[in-house]
Length: 299
Image 1: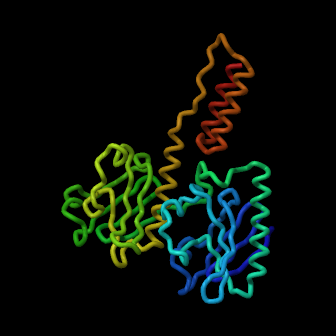
Image 2: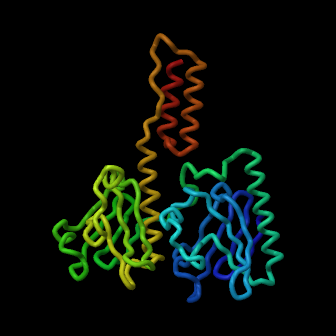
Image 3: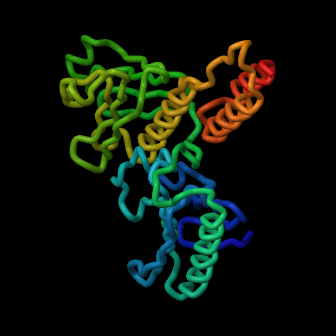
């Protein structure tokens, strides 16, 4: 489409396969939007588009993300307030006709993609389709400082806020390969926190997680500590990195062919399967190239 729709706090640019959202900077713009600056949302990351009346003479264009497509929204887990949702574009009511036009255009683009069979929007995305904020990232919680350099998360405790349990455990460092996710409870709620979820940790059949203020794998928020615009992008970046690390460990199920059976059709089938894993992001470019060469060498 290539057109631009300017609303309150953001401008949406409509491309043939994505929507580029640029957030304004200013004292009235939510701080989360200012931190995000801009985000490119592929059509494949959207499930639907709605237009509805807003408050105080406005209308709201909402591009609804698919489950599992955006690490920011997955980390938020439905805790963002409506005015802090980066997928909502608020416009003056007199621009409703223009907003409806763009909503229809975007719906048509999603429908064309569906006809081509690119994705089932009713199903969660198999991988993240929207980029997470880039590390290095850090913020101050109530009981410590959290930092993430892209390879590991570190918690450094403050003597003025950390519990004796955390002091005894000492400062913490979590290699990203040891994490399977994060748990973010908004600082706008009571007892907010950010917890690192370690592999083999709390889950089915395991003891429940301790309270966040006594868990060395968590930092707790307080008034002015760990605000949404700092802690949520941090959580999203860690979550995305942990998922990439998990995908990198997925074994490529391509068993070696014996020298006595080098059926070209079987080799071709395995290469096709390898290509599917590569397109799904479960195999890196280097792994794909190397394994494909191994298979071709069996012919």
